[in-house]
Image (cartoon, rainbow, N blue to C red; front, side, top):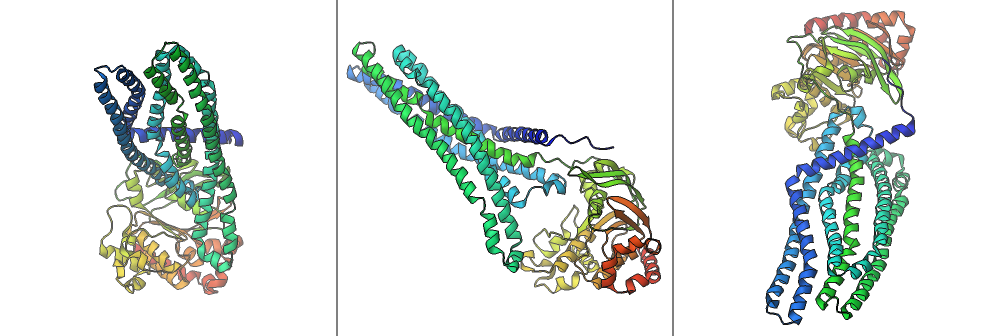
Length: 610
């Protein structure tokens, strides 16, 4: 089955952007629900504070009129003024504290969601994001996005004083209100232009920020290579190449904000003066009192409070833009699992049926159909780019094929539960990453239940790691940070980890590449004699690995060119011999002429394993 034709680039990009935007909004809603009680409290406090601010001019104006008339109710209203002001201050303080809690909880929620999706996707999807890019999305951008729920509450509350103030102006005096409304269209235009220009600037700024962070992370990871090559200045220039653009976008953001503030600073006094002028005329005509004029001026100030609205709107715009950066991780496809279990005592028979894998629109593996009997050791060989590593990834379900199926003991890998899959399918890689606090913990790291201390040591012996581990300050209890190791030693610990968790299928993806020839052969012997029996898939670059295998799968251009024993392929396929030409020169003529002896040794190893 061939994949559907790819959409044109612009349409695909637009569809992807829409999907990311939708994921961002859903993530923000989920974050708001996660702190729904606190977010509601923020909204309640901000609305109450806005109501207090809205009531303050009316209470203050009425109190002034009472005091000017020396009315008996004046002192009581004075106390009421003090209570309203105190309530506004207290509510603002409570809202500020709750806002900090909501921001922290929302940020943590977004990070957990993004990290969970990142860890649940196939490795090749996760690898599309540069490490620095991913770190920025999970830290700075998630922090900015986490502010959106509370910012929305503040933005909603910020609308109450202007809207309520306009209503109050109409209640105080129609002509005074109309004088203010003359400038409202200009305020609306300011807000609209601010939102549009701010979103564009922030999006560009964050994109440049991500790329710069990615370059910095790459340079840190390759610090030794850079130092050895003497290219520190060149790398510094590369990392900082977009710094001027970052500065330009940052200045543009502040120019947008400053321009809006400046225009509003010019507009608001004009509105206030217009209200004051019309109010003065109405006061002289006896239509309103002194207190009402004071209240009208205060309400005009609240109604023109574009600063609060602009600030809240800016926070929401920044947060949504940042959420879209973080949501790029949320849009990664999940490598889902079923609930099926494997039959008890299965031998580990692996079957690939019409497997096809597509990367970047091109088929990398095509028409792969193969049955590997349980207990068989299979060497997957081929030139660089033949698809060996992708074959290994599909075999143990680090990724799913785009077409076809992979079955283990008759059960499709897609249908297996995650627990069963990772307990029964183990991996060792060419560049393992050691996880855990100690050397022993790194070997034991993996699916539950973990191996005991004796099993850890046995796995280390099988991988040839036990001698150098025992020389460490605290042997298996040595902290990884205190155990500097060579590439070969790290690779041995990676093999030990795979051996300690060996199930019915074990995949070694060039896992002995950093070992010397003698050690690699010792590991191969131990794999046959000391590790739990099962099916082994060995991505092989060494001739000795192919010699010891029960079956060789020869890949070329993403297809199976031939299968058979090493001896058969070596005798009848000159192109097969050419695959190992470089290895032949390195390992001496003994590797090419000693087929008979190695075939016999392989049979002995297999018998011992059984």
